[in-house]
Image (cartoon, rainbow, N blue to C red):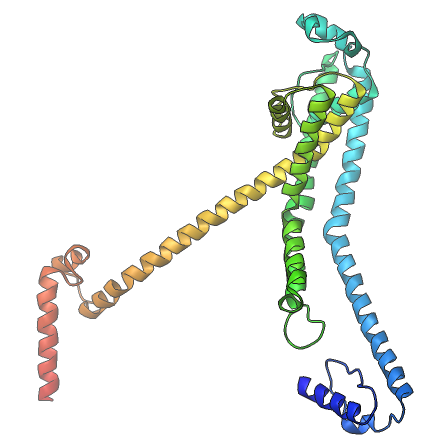
Length: 369
């Protein structure tokens, strides 16, 4: 196909015309070009070909957008809508059921740990924070409910929150992540714009190929990147807002994302409550997705090691199997020496002599015949 295109282009350049633009799937005969007496006809035909190529590329882009919408957008919108309803309904309920922080501070006899500005009535930011932290079972223990009925609602709220988070991780982060990675990898591997039979990932400048590989890898490892950004934001916020040390800030960020709750927030101000609420809302699912990727990587390494060891053992057993099959006739009762073949050789003590005698007798019969 390339030689045909080059021959057509050389003939038109020699005749003073412009080389035509051909479709990559067909080669036009030479008689077709004799009907183009002027350069304007060539330009019109070239414009028509360009329009067809643009339509094809536009259809490809639309198909990719639809695939992304099916894989990512619809599950994300469904889970996000349910989670927002769960979050804000819980915040409205907790706004009317939480105890005053001053009462809890006095009950714990921990007034020396708090400032007067931190002892105030329950705000919507505090209720939103409590809706997130009890829904994800973080357990900071900063706020408590007033009555037993509110505690029963907290149990129900936490059950719904864990269910929504598990569904979101399955629908949005884990299963579609693998599907999307395979889809993009397949699109990049099969795409061949110039129609020469070589995928575009193996052609083009080296920098473009590196950029394509980088963005593919970045998309597959997106949970780790977002988790690192979320963790860093918590460390920076606590270090600046409360003046915590780097160690204390990292301690808070890690055990907040792992739902350990060993280090609680530094106060009950609206800025602290809102930041902690959205930090937990975004960071905990990312932490779970990243840990699942780590576990998958470890299991993949383990499975590959087991398979390689099995292949090595099968290669070592092949000579023994062939020799034992040659010395032991099928359907014959195995002797005692045959059972000790794995320790003393493929035919054992008695089997070895029997095998040699049997082979010599068979050779005599063959020579006599």
